[in-house]
Every structure is written in C-alpha cells, then in structure tokens.
Length: 247
Image (cartoon, rainbow, N blue to C red; front, side):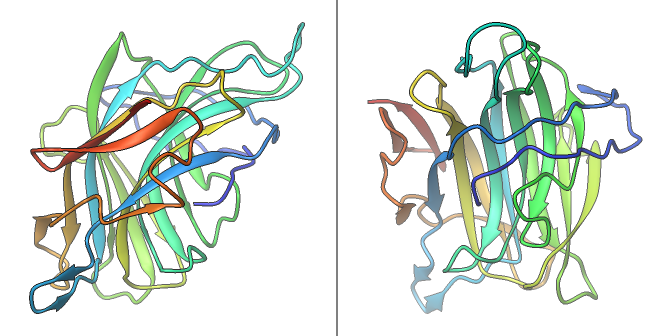
C-alpha cells in the first residue's frame, strides 16, 4: 500500500514450480512510488461487501526498469510490482501478497520476487522467495485470507502452476480482520519504468472464510485516479478482469 523501501528479505524454505530458492539482495529507496489501485464495488443490492480475503490471477511478465542512475554500481534501485490486497478505507491497515521486479542498489541484475506485506511490516517486505524469470510471461494465482479462529492473522498464498495448490504459504500478521478488496499496480521511479499489468479472475472471500465469489464490479473506485501512474490507465474488461496500459 505505502511507498516501499526495499529491505531485508527472509527466504522461506520451499522449492516448487517456478519458485527458485536463493538469498535475495537488499536494496535502498530511490524515489516515491506511483500506484494505481482498483477496488471492488462495496455497495451491492442488500447492503455492502465486507472482504475477509482476496484472490487474483496476475500476469508475470518482464517490465522495463529505469536504470536509475549511471555507471556501475547502480546508484539506486527501481522496481515494478503487482499485488492483491485487502485494506481499510484510510489505507492505514492492509494485508497484501504479490510479485515485484527490481534492480537492487549496487547491482545491475534484475530480481523477480514474491513477497508479502502488511501494516505491521511498514515499508518493507516481510518475507519472500525468488521467482523464475518470465520467458516471456506466465500466469500465477495470488491470494490472502483471514485465518479461521483468529481475529487479525492472515495467510498469503501463491499458486505458480495454476493447479489449485498453494506453492508458497506465509503468515501475515495484521491489525484488522476484514475490509475491502483491491488490486495494485506500482512502479518506482519515473517514466522509464513500465507499469503495464493484467489482473483477472478477481474474487473476494465471504465471512464463512471458505467461499470465494467474483467481484461485482472492479472499477467502482480507483486510487487516487484511474491514471495516477503517469502515462498509464486502468481499464475494465469483461470476464472479471482489468488491465493497466499505456494511454
């Protein structure tokens, strides 16, 4: 949710599908992040929707990154990311899981990483694993859900093979139990970093903590605007999906 400063990454001991274990380098903040957030339609017939989890299939693809400085080593880092998240109306409380492509500080190598974050891990990734480099792209399912029997603990999951199995599971402590579903696209820094993105099969989790249903309308709210990333716009598509494209 908030502009990220890439920090220490804790590698989780798994090795399946496109997940590839290796230590991930830390990197430093370079510039403020630009973000487009789309939100489910919270008002439907009979009342409003409260989300206890959020699931989306995200397109994993290679994005162009701003070199963010000249010479070697690189003077700072650049990144582009996509996430599925649940957040409150102020944006101060959230839980999310997603993927990021970035160039660490003092390096020229591009890193692809899955990560989880919440309001209890402010401005850095709580944990992560390296992802296989898209060649040129692939789809993966990301979701987070409130854990049964807890008030504020969440679990994050990734299915990189789209076989219905969770290839990565991570506990994500937070300070809230439910709210609204969002999709997020972000980049840092500047216009040289691509923000093209695609989110599909958008679903939220009902209060039984078991049933996922499709978003009724994923363009009811965009923060702060549908084109808040300079040169890019969010567009709704049939089939319960949306894209972020140059405009």
